[in-house]
Image (cartoon, rainbow, N blue to C red; front, top):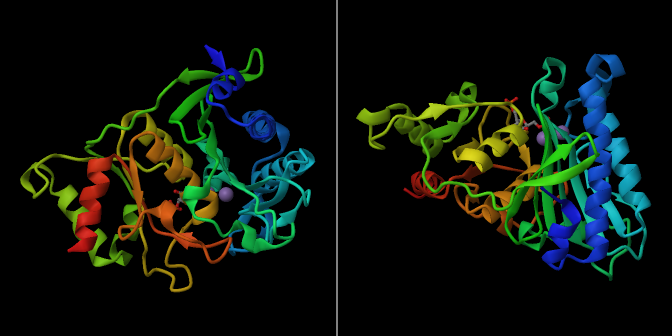
Length: 323
Ligand code: AHG
Ligand code: MN
Ligand code: MN
């Protein structure tokens, strides 16, 4: 078993970037501990507040956000952060080389049922010519990411990480406190017979997605010629982890349930880092019409349709959108 730093040093990852990643992981270890204590630590349940996106905040959303924000800004190498739980960006060191975006706690609705949750993060280069409180610094496509990862708080605490040279999986060794490399090269199988989608939204989807899923449900007798299985964890981090481990297709497509919110997942905090991890593991990620990592954001809290996972299956789904 190898620790995180020697592995990344071999890839020639900049030492400042490496120490920033290690700092984020230190905060995640603290979150993992509090999550594991559950009700004993008084961290379960909701607050009275809402975030900028009108979602009720859980106590753990706030705790995780505060922990991450504090340690990341203390590194001195970060010019600003943008979080799902912050209305605006938070400025750091004007000379910092990096920007960090994060979803401090993904899968909030799972907190109170002791089910999978996680932290998702992404690191971008900081433009030198802009002020530390200028949110336009963050409007970079996913292809500009220097690193992305998630920490999954499950039966084991696991890290998926990429710096653009493949996706690696690590497991937190709670006896010594560090993340140890347990999968050198995560590889998503090209073909799959497993899909993850919130079926309760079916009647609100656009026709392309309705037809695609209807065809999967027909199984062997239908146009796809095989039986598909379904999973839904209600935490993207859990669903993407399964896709990285054994393949599958995960989708949170556009729907017309709430006209003010046609897409659910957030480009900067969820879709881009997960797309980077998935592509680096040989998978694909698209809106159905374009590659997610090519999108040039117009707003830090922008939302996007997501279809990601096993390459052949994602391509099949895209074909339904192009008909
Ligand atoms: P968050 O907890 O950060 O708000 O994200 C939840 C997201 C995503 O993780 C998950 O795939 C999806 O919302 C679950 O949505 P449903 O409530 O429709 O199942
Ligand atoms: Mn989330
Ligand atoms: Mn969240």
